[in-house]
Length: 110
Image 1 (cartoon, rainbow, N blue to C red):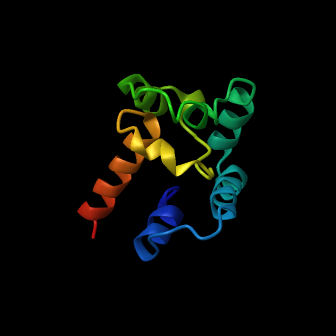
Image 2: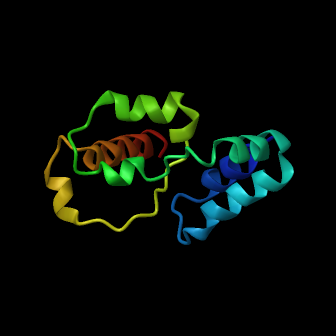
Image 3: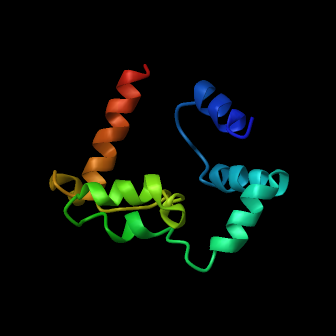
């Protein structure tokens, strides 16, 4: 049920137009899910939402994704960034890896 909103949204829409939607989703879950709210309060001092953004141009390392998948403090990343498209020329950096993954995911789900 918790993911129903986002699953339904992304099933019917393939692009976020307004980055506030992400904030609305998080706010919605914060308000209706005591466990999520408790986790937010407990981990907010150690939260690392800018980890990916601060490392876009660094050489991709699987640990960057492992932190996101396995360490709660890294599990929510701010993804509404403006960036210099020149960074995409470096095929070994984190940003290029994220775009490659998203493109493969999008093509798989078309």
